[in-house]
Length: 126
Image (cartoon, rainbow, N blue to C red; front, side):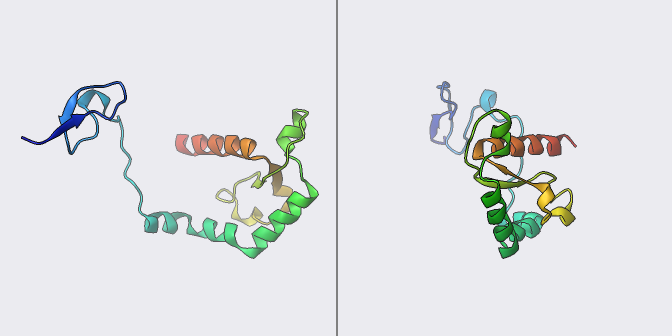
């Protein structure tokens, strides 16, 4: 007989085999396979290299110097420091606009996270 422990679900006290994480009623519905570092780099390597490049870092810094306040917060009547230079049209959608200043806007971390989440939802529904 294998050693047992409680299900990892915080409210469940059911005992399960030690090599399992959850009981049958709390197992995740879908488990997507974890990508290896090499797979992620092969898929997103071009974009990662771009965001670390001197040309992007210089453009991003200069843009935030000339637009120091979050452009979404301004529309709400707030003055919040911009933390991120964001591409309006993602570079995954149009690589040629990656250094185009008309495709940039300054955002705070809060609004950048909202925009990123919306883009992820849009991509997953395609």
